[in-house]
Image (cartoon, rainbow, N blue to C red; front, top):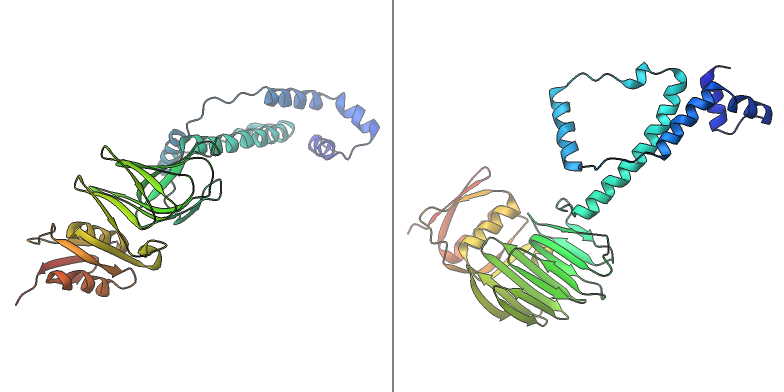
Length: 305
């Protein structure tokens, strides 16, 4: 039986008492013990996941030759090295998970996100959130970029922070939209407190607070239980046309040209997320515009008489 087979049998607990004593007195066992002690006393250096990923990506792109230390080891040390690798791999997997939780990596790929307390978030197009799982029970803080609908489980204070404002609740359903020069909070159940633009306001069901181009506005909506975009439609009430065009670009991944068009004129209406031509008709008809589709580019023009 070669050395590798002896070690494998020992690791699997398949040796007799006599073989156990014989193996523990061997040079191989002494060498393996030293390696295992080194693993037990191992302290990993600080790990920067983003930096290491960039180094790995660069190495992969440049296709540099890699000399494997594993190939240089004897058969006995190879098995011991595998054990070391398993332990270290377990450490780094844990460390990467911890890094992700502490650094609050942005979640953007998913449209549906469950938070640690089973609160639920639905993300609209081109939107993302991040939060820290550690200490979530006491500090339920979510950072948002874009547009999201929240169903918050009752519990400790729940905060949604964006660049333009902060929404505070205990348990309710609401939407927060934070786009460039456009901030809007809609309450669907319960109540929410909004701090934005040096203003503080408490919203009840169907109340809306928004800031457009640095101007505050409060209004109410008809009885609704959720945003229209959850049902495949974007709706607007007295919103400058430029924000409607921006939303069309996000939903359909198109580029819109609107030369000589008054994009500050107010638009009230909606458009579907399921058919681009129908969506364009819904937007252009009320404001007397024409459109032309060229691949993923849309040209808006003033309607000719």
